[in-house]
Image (cartoon, rainbow, N blue to C red; front, side, top):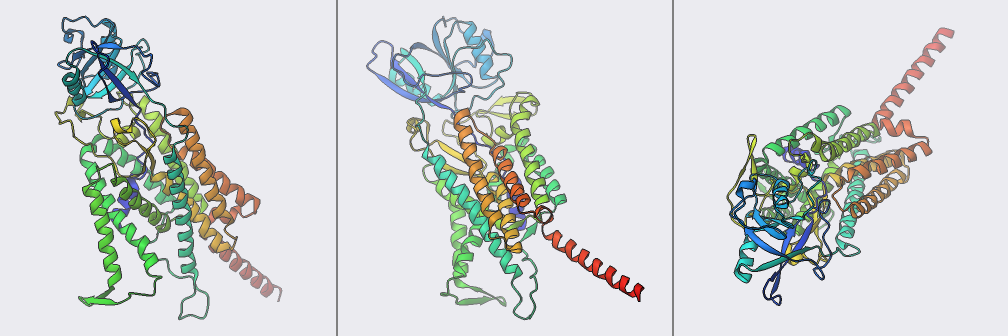
Length: 534
């Protein structure tokens, strides 16, 4: 699997489902309402409920205070803010503090302009229960554009178009995830059959030595991996702007290798084009060399154009599927005990860093969400303080490439806010996929007609459905492992109990060794007993 693969595995769990809550700022000329224009905003629906349309909405005259960050009352110029919408610059303090100051001076709406694109309002609301005015982020370039279009006479209102009744991007993600888990598990089973196939030079059935690229996780290795994951997440939290490029590089290398492994497994079954070339006393098939060049080209193309949202997501998903398939096939769980330890620890990992860390961090932010979303807009960590970072309006913040991305084409605000994506982390595919792969290999070893593998795959699909239902009901990102782990573990355990194979399923390959040892010991005891009788 190599160092790139192991490093890639350390970060595949760092991305929960995150969706920016987007809305629209509808601006009109306060003196001539026939002129109007829309701009994109981001807001927190847990703080503010926006109407679904601007029809019959209340408009407020906009007061442009972008020369101020509004972090103290002394920054307010001598203007009347009563019953107005106010736009100020981001930076120096929380959007909630700006909102309190604006509300105390009579403002009815606060817009915070950012030069670094749209931010996500995710601050800790504790202690701000009296804050009732709507808060939203807007691009600074849009504020400048409004002034050029409408002059100083601007009236604004906010609204958020409803999402369509059914989001087809979720269906696509569901099909991709279930397909990847099923195919990865099936491929792992084929690899197990290859290992069990007798050697051509032997007359007896002998188990082949596992291939070098296969890696087995023992319970101790699982615990060590869990600790490394926690350390890696904390390092990314504090040193994101440097480590993100390391992760991008690792993903490029690991995904290119994974794509080659997946495609070469297909090509080797084709009986054509097997001509070879020799160099430095080594030979290789020409078609595999061409395939390697193709995989490297796909990975490099994605790396160069990774921020082109209109089409780069296709390459990322192709590389991501190959990445997940290769790991599910390559990384082997020795028994169900190791699966329970791995899935249980990573479930706790997901829940702790998403739901518990907001109570431990100074700003009430989730470490998992903070790392997944990237650096917070126009600020960066500098020791103990937050300092404003000058940037152009077209700056793109790097994101960790550890997700399957599918655009939400039906969303009506897409043209204003850019492409909106539904996301699923690689960890939500690979971690349950390792259990499905173990079930498939257990089926192969026990000749159980794929009952464990099929049941686990169906349980994974049911867990994904539950995840999406909760996502749509709660309207906020969910750690998918919270639903996938119980579904897959409980189902696999139930099948083992029903078939009365729990001991064998729990111990896996070790059970056969134990059984052989017990049989040998029993035979030795019987022989010894017979000798004593004689």
